[in-house]
Amino acid sequence: MVTDLRAPSLRARLRGSWRILAKEIAAFGLVGALAFAMDIGIFTWLTHAEHWGALKSKALSTVVSTTFAYFGNRNLSFSHRARTSIGRETAFFFGINAITLVFSELAIALFVYPLGFDHASTTVLVVNLATIAIGTLFRFWAYKRFVFLHPDKVHAEDVDLDEELAE
Image (cartoon, rainbow, N blue to C red; front, side, top):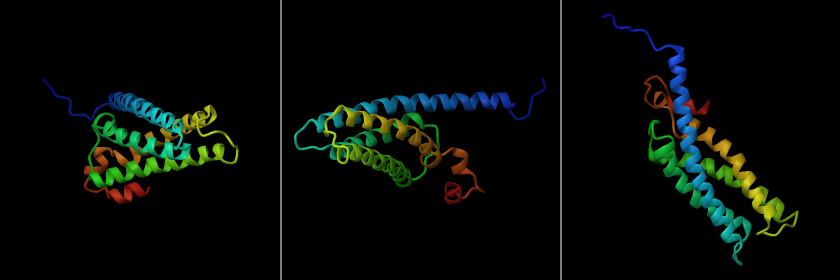
């Protein structure tokens, strides 16, 4: 019996890549749906409390849902990816989420202050939903690029991780 020592075909590699991407998207969606429910639930609950405004509510709801999302994404969505230091991973993860929080806060502030919508209005809730949707696309790309790295990028001897991330 002759053993085929050739590299896997392009078709086999693509099929494997698509399966991994589908798994990542499905798990990211599940974790994201749970974090989304937490974010919206906490935001709505706090904005209806008399002493919480939309901006404070958004900040707290984001911190809680982001903490949940980190553990969910690390242990489910991107569990097959290489682990780097916990400090590096969490710094990038929470930094990316801080960027999306600033974007959300600016959009909400625009509607609450210059445009005069009530903190607990449906319009502010819709703005919050829209910023979460836009932020989700950015986060998926950024997590794969900067946080949960491909094992080949982390373990390759000739790859400088700092240089790779700077590209």
